[in-house]
Image (cartoon, rainbow, N blue to C red; front, top):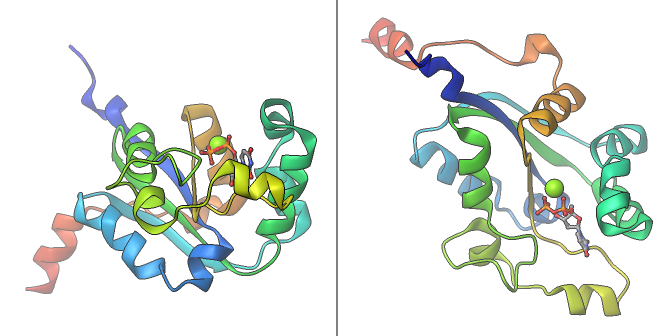
Length: 170
Ligand code: UDP
Ligand code: MG
């Protein structure tokens, strides 16, 4: 028999400085709560370069180029961000679906990047800036594990049963 627990995953979301600057924290967080995902960790931080480099690893330089990694690290240290640990059924894929494609211009309407941003790769490249797309979400199980460790101590990720909490209030 399949162990259903294997389908419950945790994933990391970052609301990048552009999301914080534009006052979109509540609205984006609401979308994840609305589908029933559980917030198990939440904090506002102004990242250091050291943490930003741990988050945007060599892998980004290999996939997108060293200049993109540099721009992303600069972007991440430019202001406060909100780090969120979400738990839910196959949460990694689900959150990526809700976030949408990397380039806001091409991201589908209904996704976070498609609904709240519209910048294109062409526009960002011409100005030699990173693509401001509001949000980061882990792309697979290995990344989720590693990224959650970058932003949260184990003690900051909570285990709780929401139904139990409700019963104790009433
Ligand atoms: N990025 C960029 N220019 C590019 C590709 C990516 O500025 O040509 C930025 C963009 O903000 C993206 C981040 O680098 O969110 C990480 O890239 P990745 O390929 O991991 O995309 P994501 O997983 O965020 O969709
Ligand atoms: Mg990525």
